[in-house]
Image (cartoon, rainbow, N blue to C red):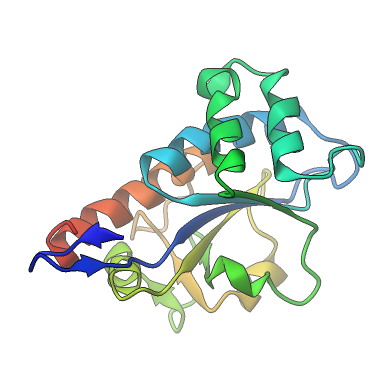
Length: 194
Protein backbone atom coordinates (compact mmCIF):
# COMPACT_ATOMS: atom_id res chain seq x y z
CA UNK A 1 0.00 0.00 0.00
CA UNK A 2 1.05 3.51 -0.59
CA UNK A 3 -0.39 6.95 0.02
CA UNK A 4 -2.32 8.30 -2.98
CA UNK A 5 -2.34 11.91 -4.09
CA UNK A 6 -5.68 12.49 -2.36
CA UNK A 7 -4.53 11.00 0.94
CA UNK A 8 -6.14 7.55 0.49
CA UNK A 9 -4.21 4.33 0.85
CA UNK A 10 -3.92 2.71 -2.57
CA UNK A 11 -2.72 -0.76 -3.48
CA UNK A 12 -0.44 -0.74 -6.51
CA UNK A 13 -0.09 -3.74 -8.77
CA UNK A 14 3.09 -5.76 -8.30
CA UNK A 15 5.94 -5.48 -10.79
CA UNK A 16 7.92 -8.69 -11.32
CA UNK A 17 11.24 -8.70 -13.12
CA UNK A 18 11.63 -12.15 -14.69
CA UNK A 19 14.91 -13.49 -16.07
CA UNK A 20 14.34 -16.09 -18.79
CA UNK A 21 17.27 -18.46 -19.37
CA UNK A 22 18.13 -18.55 -23.05
CA UNK A 23 21.73 -19.63 -22.35
CA UNK A 24 22.74 -23.21 -21.64
CA UNK A 25 19.73 -25.19 -20.33
CA UNK A 26 21.99 -27.76 -18.62
CA UNK A 27 24.92 -25.94 -17.03
CA UNK A 28 24.67 -22.89 -14.78
CA UNK A 29 27.02 -20.32 -16.29
CA UNK A 30 28.75 -17.34 -14.75
CA UNK A 31 26.32 -15.14 -16.72
CA UNK A 32 23.36 -16.71 -14.85
CA UNK A 33 24.91 -15.99 -11.45
CA UNK A 34 25.97 -12.45 -12.31
CA UNK A 35 22.59 -11.49 -13.80
CA UNK A 36 20.76 -12.86 -10.78
CA UNK A 37 23.07 -11.08 -8.33
CA UNK A 38 22.69 -7.81 -10.28
CA UNK A 39 18.92 -8.11 -10.51
CA UNK A 40 18.32 -8.29 -6.75
CA UNK A 41 19.33 -4.69 -5.91
CA UNK A 42 17.31 -3.43 -8.88
CA UNK A 43 14.23 -5.32 -7.68
CA UNK A 44 14.65 -3.91 -4.18
CA UNK A 45 15.29 -0.38 -5.44
CA UNK A 46 12.06 -0.36 -7.45
CA UNK A 47 9.92 -2.44 -5.06
CA UNK A 48 9.64 -5.28 -7.58
CA UNK A 49 9.59 -9.03 -7.23
CA UNK A 50 12.23 -11.13 -8.98
CA UNK A 51 11.69 -14.44 -10.77
CA UNK A 52 13.97 -16.74 -12.69
CA UNK A 53 12.75 -19.11 -15.39
CA UNK A 54 14.64 -22.18 -16.56
CA UNK A 55 17.88 -21.65 -14.65
CA UNK A 56 19.76 -24.98 -14.47
CA UNK A 57 20.10 -25.07 -10.70
CA UNK A 58 21.39 -27.91 -8.58
CA UNK A 59 18.38 -30.08 -7.69
CA UNK A 60 19.45 -29.95 -4.03
CA UNK A 61 18.39 -26.27 -4.01
CA UNK A 62 14.68 -26.67 -3.37
CA UNK A 63 13.47 -23.24 -2.32
CA UNK A 64 14.15 -19.67 -3.42
CA UNK A 65 15.79 -19.01 -0.02
CA UNK A 66 18.16 -21.95 -0.56
CA UNK A 67 19.01 -20.63 -4.05
CA UNK A 68 19.67 -17.15 -2.64
CA UNK A 69 21.86 -18.45 0.19
CA UNK A 70 23.86 -20.58 -2.24
CA UNK A 71 24.36 -17.63 -4.61
CA UNK A 72 25.57 -15.50 -1.71
CA UNK A 73 28.52 -17.87 -1.31
CA UNK A 74 29.56 -17.31 -4.95
CA UNK A 75 29.41 -13.54 -5.53
CA UNK A 76 30.36 -10.13 -4.18
CA UNK A 77 27.64 -8.43 -6.27
CA UNK A 78 24.52 -7.13 -4.49
CA UNK A 79 26.24 -6.91 -1.10
CA UNK A 80 27.58 -10.42 -1.48
CA UNK A 81 24.17 -11.84 -2.31
CA UNK A 82 22.56 -10.39 0.84
CA UNK A 83 20.01 -8.46 -1.20
CA UNK A 84 18.83 -11.61 -2.98
CA UNK A 85 18.51 -13.34 0.39
CA UNK A 86 16.46 -10.38 1.63
CA UNK A 87 14.12 -10.69 -1.38
CA UNK A 88 13.82 -14.47 -0.95
CA UNK A 89 13.09 -14.28 2.78
CA UNK A 90 10.37 -11.72 2.05
CA UNK A 91 8.77 -14.13 -0.47
CA UNK A 92 9.66 -11.82 -3.36
CA UNK A 93 12.06 -14.12 -5.24
CA UNK A 94 10.62 -17.06 -7.17
CA UNK A 95 12.13 -19.93 -9.15
CA UNK A 96 10.33 -21.62 -12.06
CA UNK A 97 11.11 -24.18 -14.75
CA UNK A 98 10.94 -22.96 -18.34
CA UNK A 99 7.28 -22.57 -19.22
CA UNK A 100 5.83 -24.84 -21.88
CA UNK A 101 2.62 -22.95 -22.71
CA UNK A 102 2.77 -19.73 -20.76
CA UNK A 103 4.08 -18.13 -17.63
CA UNK A 104 2.65 -18.71 -14.15
CA UNK A 105 -0.40 -16.44 -13.81
CA UNK A 106 0.64 -15.23 -10.36
CA UNK A 107 3.41 -13.23 -12.05
CA UNK A 108 0.89 -10.90 -13.69
CA UNK A 109 0.33 -9.84 -17.28
CA UNK A 110 3.39 -10.80 -19.30
CA UNK A 111 5.28 -8.04 -21.09
CA UNK A 112 8.24 -9.09 -23.23
CA UNK A 113 11.09 -6.58 -23.19
CA UNK A 114 12.36 -6.40 -26.75
CA UNK A 115 13.92 -3.96 -29.20
CA UNK A 116 11.60 -5.34 -31.91
CA UNK A 117 8.06 -5.03 -30.54
CA UNK A 118 5.05 -6.13 -32.56
CA UNK A 119 3.13 -2.98 -33.47
CA UNK A 120 -0.13 -4.54 -32.23
CA UNK A 121 1.38 -5.42 -28.84
CA UNK A 122 3.61 -2.39 -28.27
CA UNK A 123 3.33 -0.61 -24.93
CA UNK A 124 5.49 1.95 -23.17
CA UNK A 125 6.52 2.74 -19.58
CA UNK A 126 3.57 5.11 -19.14
CA UNK A 127 1.15 2.29 -20.01
CA UNK A 128 2.93 0.03 -17.49
CA UNK A 129 2.75 2.73 -14.81
CA UNK A 130 -0.97 3.17 -15.44
CA UNK A 131 -1.54 -0.59 -15.12
CA UNK A 132 0.35 -0.71 -11.82
CA UNK A 133 -1.41 2.42 -10.53
CA UNK A 134 -4.73 0.65 -11.16
CA UNK A 135 -3.71 -2.42 -9.16
CA UNK A 136 -2.82 -4.68 -12.09
CA UNK A 137 0.37 -6.73 -11.75
CA UNK A 138 2.91 -6.98 -14.55
CA UNK A 139 5.70 -9.43 -15.34
CA UNK A 140 8.52 -7.83 -17.33
CA UNK A 141 10.28 -10.67 -19.10
CA UNK A 142 14.01 -10.31 -19.89
CA UNK A 143 15.92 -12.77 -22.05
CA UNK A 144 19.22 -13.81 -20.56
CA UNK A 145 21.46 -14.83 -23.42
CA UNK A 146 23.16 -13.46 -26.52
CA UNK A 147 19.93 -13.48 -28.53
CA UNK A 148 17.52 -12.35 -25.83
CA UNK A 149 14.09 -13.93 -25.59
CA UNK A 150 13.25 -16.73 -28.03
CA UNK A 151 10.72 -15.69 -30.69
CA UNK A 152 8.11 -18.16 -29.39
CA UNK A 153 8.32 -16.64 -25.93
CA UNK A 154 8.01 -13.12 -27.31
CA UNK A 155 4.97 -14.23 -29.28
CA UNK A 156 3.10 -15.57 -26.21
CA UNK A 157 3.58 -12.29 -24.32
CA UNK A 158 0.43 -10.18 -24.33
CA UNK A 159 2.47 -6.97 -24.65
CA UNK A 160 5.90 -5.86 -25.86
CA UNK A 161 7.97 -3.03 -24.40
CA UNK A 162 10.94 -1.35 -26.08
CA UNK A 163 12.23 0.88 -23.30
CA UNK A 164 14.38 2.86 -25.76
CA UNK A 165 11.40 3.49 -28.09
CA UNK A 166 14.01 3.49 -30.85
CA UNK A 167 14.61 -0.20 -31.49
CA UNK A 168 18.00 -0.14 -29.78
CA UNK A 169 18.93 -3.57 -28.38
CA UNK A 170 20.21 -3.36 -24.80
CA UNK A 171 22.32 -5.88 -22.93
CA UNK A 172 20.18 -7.73 -20.37
CA UNK A 173 21.49 -6.03 -17.24
CA UNK A 174 21.25 -2.61 -18.89
CA UNK A 175 17.61 -3.27 -19.81
CA UNK A 176 17.00 -4.69 -16.33
CA UNK A 177 17.92 -1.31 -14.85
CA UNK A 178 16.33 0.87 -17.52
CA UNK A 179 12.87 -0.73 -17.58
CA UNK A 180 11.91 -0.37 -13.89
CA UNK A 181 13.54 3.08 -13.75
CA UNK A 182 11.44 4.27 -16.70
CA UNK A 183 8.30 2.75 -15.19
CA UNK A 184 9.01 4.34 -11.78
CA UNK A 185 9.47 7.75 -13.40
CA UNK A 186 6.26 7.30 -15.41
CA UNK A 187 4.42 6.22 -12.26
CA UNK A 188 5.29 9.55 -10.66
CA UNK A 189 3.80 11.36 -13.65
CA UNK A 190 0.74 9.06 -13.97
CA UNK A 191 -0.15 8.96 -10.33
CA UNK A 192 1.50 11.91 -8.66
CA UNK A 193 4.04 9.64 -7.00
CA UNK A 194 1.79 7.58 -4.83
